[in-house]
View 1 (cartoon, rainbow over the protein chains, first blue to last red):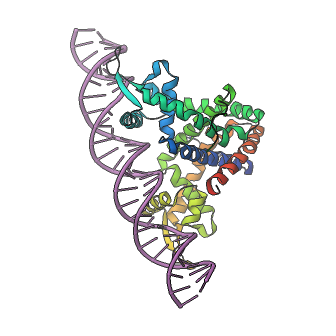
View 2: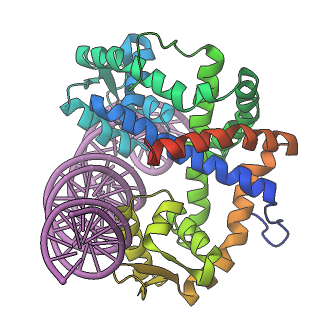
View 3: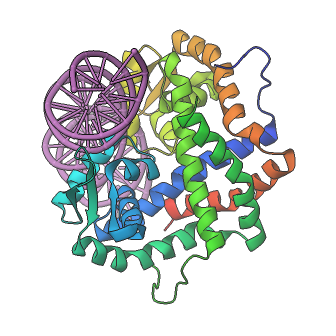
Length: 158
Length: 158
DNA sequence: CCCATTTAATTCAGTATTCAACATTTACGG
DNA sequence: CCGTAAATGTTGAATACTGAATTAAATGGG
């Protein structure tokens, strides 16, 4: 891991930044979850719907879907099973690689997506986006991007 | 909820900022969790330890602990039960209000905290804090603070 | 004082997540 | 080619989370 002995403790500024980030993450997820509840969807459901509806033919390989939603394969498998039971997606086998499966958006899944998306966007605006100035949002993205990159390499590479 | 019909979709900039924030949140939590694993702690465990060790007499009422860690009472109750079994905390009844309970840090909990904290701080630095310039970190905190406040009122008030 | 409310915390049942074990198919080195 | 290794997904058991119902104690208006 890291050499601990000479790692300086967080300053007051750093402490505050860190805790604020933590709080925002958690509160935000909770709020979005609450706003999706009336539509019978969870954040996870919604994210799957987004990814599939943006994909070629509204379908993705399980692995790719797991990667792009940052979940384990196991978790995704359970998740897709639930959504399959709910009629939002279905599994389809893959010609070129007989180990593989596609998760495919059903008509119902697509309709659900189109119906819910505007509300979700409104929710994201209300609780996040619209609370920043354009400049702040730009700055936020700029400073967060290297962090995301760092974490992605940390994750795969090592 | 919100009037949906006239909510503009997210622009490209907004979209990117939003997704980057999401990715950072998730990847970061995963990474911190991984870094805590060798010590047999989860993020949730660690957060409880932090809160208790900073508190008067290293103890907090269940309600207060739930509030400051932003969890439901139910979840906290389970969490404390687990940590009690692990010997990190214990429950103590409250004199002034016989409905109430304190969660109290044990010696072992305190020792664990002192042992693990440096590593955790190193982890937070490595994967978050040290990836920003001082100015960016300050800007981050400044722009995130109103969001946290908004979400907190949204949560309790309504 | 008494009863209806509110507050503190837990419990229970249903659901979701994790982690390891497994089956199957593909890739590749010799 | 063969056989071992790697990749794709699923499953099952253990663990954790959620939301509603429950117990118990405090509060407060009439």
